[in-house]
Length: 213
Length: 246
Ligand SMILES: Nc1ncnc2c1ncn2[C@@H]1O[C@H](COP(=O)(O)OP(=O)(O)OP(=O)(O)O)[C@@H](O)[C@H]1O
Ligand SMILES: [Mg+2]
Image 1 (cartoon, rainbow over the protein chains, first blue to last red):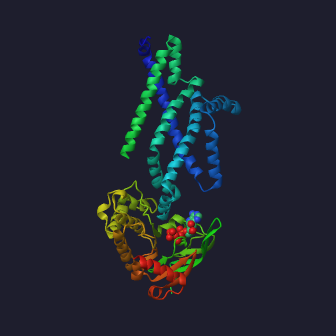
Image 2 (image 1 turned 30 degrees about the horizontal axis):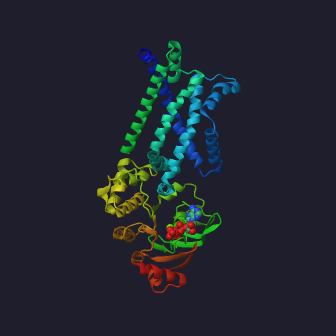
Image 3 (image 1 turned 90 degrees about the vertical axis):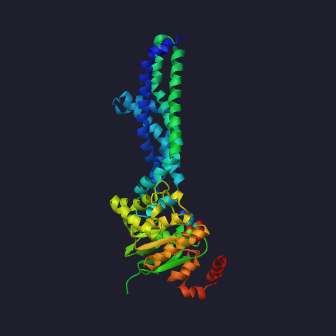
């Protein structure tokens, strides 16, 4: 075992970690709002909207992330005849894929608030969107905080899938370094520790937020 | 003679096949307090929800202050003129009492925050809980919560107030503080449509009592007449049961 190799490659690994975190952050920030819209659409009284959103959610949930990424990375450029940047296709795939999981979390959160609160809001002359925004969503988000945190961690772990298209996230960076130095064990241990630390920090943060609300 | 402020005209509503309202007609004049009673499932709540368009009906119409609910293109505007109080208060637990009361005046009516707070404190004072304005509803007693909910409805300065069993979720010792507020409101000339089994309240301020059964009004009578000589067997039986409970 040669632990110096970790030290030598630490700046590189940290840069990879930064890339993974950024990718996860962008994916969460875009897929969560999209998930909210999907959830609201799915709960709509308009049948066409509810069926469309429900169908989309079920379709996406039955596909693995790798396949969705393949679609956007290889197939969309073929179909449209236009090249999509690496980052572009990764982000699009992540956002579409993860938005349906957020949609399911948000949907159960909204349902936990219940229709009587909606009726109360409507009865005071608020519109339906205002009622959702000011009355239902704040309560729903509080109820779903634990599930949302878990999902954010899943998104972060999911960024490793960008490895397969050669994007420089943490795992890919580590594997390049492993190949270059011939020290895979040390480097993958380092990577595992990094994932462990980030995920633990995330859970602790969530537990804190939960206690405060 | 002026037109009634609420006209319920041959209202009919079915929930997939089940008839919840079957030809209900009722006029409420401005300033009147009408008490609606009747057994569970007779359609009282459904009737109230039709008045402010929370429930869609298939037959007949409700006209509130000249506006047809059936043809109404702007339900939020209609609802601003109709306050509603619920059995389980339905305060927003994530907001303070003051925020509960100011939300709709700010967002639906367009008042400034300062103006909305002034109005809110006026009505919180009227229901006797101005000192609780900064607390969250969960910290209030049931009676205080229901009074806050009444203030929330009043803050929109509605022409009509609907009450759906406002005291039936309360502990006995808190019922009277809520009824007190409602009595004052009725005496100040507010038009009220009240679903309740509080016959003491009805006797005190109701102009008329309406008895519903299986989606229809089976009896409507002046208050004194209702208590002294109910016409229908069902109403007599019901009254007997309700009065025996007190
Ligand atoms: N959304 C709904 N879907 C199906 N049936 C409903 C719905 N709302 C009410 N009902 C039915 O309509 C009937 C009338 O209900 P409603 O709540 O108006 O009665 P109520 O007189 O208020 O009774 P309670 O005293 O129990 O509050 C009941 O049989 C109820 O089961
Ligand atoms: Mg009811």
